[in-house]
Length: 243
Image 1: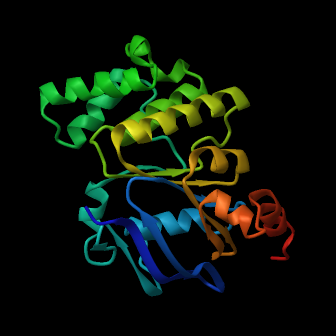
Image 2: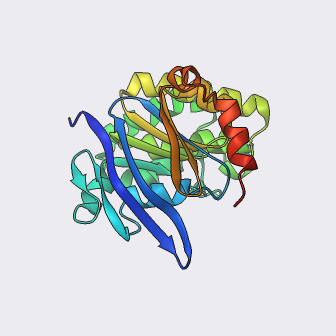
């Protein structure tokens, strides 16, 4: 496996007069939980869409496991699990039916598909609720199922766009604990966006702080603090900077 899951060089994408991603050069090692930390509207979601080849850059380049996002977008997406703004669940189906449907989309054979569904539901503490209709579940349970769906086909890289947004504090903490445990157990790279400082510090081995499409600082949380850019001070500074 490539030593870097993600490598971008001067990656740039604009919409009209706004540069949503403005010359980002970034490396994300394989096998870690990496966080992109910034306020709403800072370019986090656009950056993910560029990495998945869902948007073409105006300038610069990006590679995911050595694959170019312009040429190899389909191959990149096959190796990735993704949870963006919407959970993608079919709420009139049960939890097990949801995962079985997505397993069929990924063309997983029947027996391995059943085993994997049991595995991911168990990992998230949802197996005993597998026959429940999803519509009646809490937001936190739905989010766990959505992440289980994104992990079903054993991706090498999992993209999570603000996975705890809108959850109450207890549900958010439980989900962070599940993510930390599962990232280690599955041995995958997790790339998550967040505007939650606690989440970033608890989950991420490395961080990049982004504002107005530009990376202000990157590295392990401890090294950022050591460089007098504590996460809290940097985040407050980002929020106070004029747009």
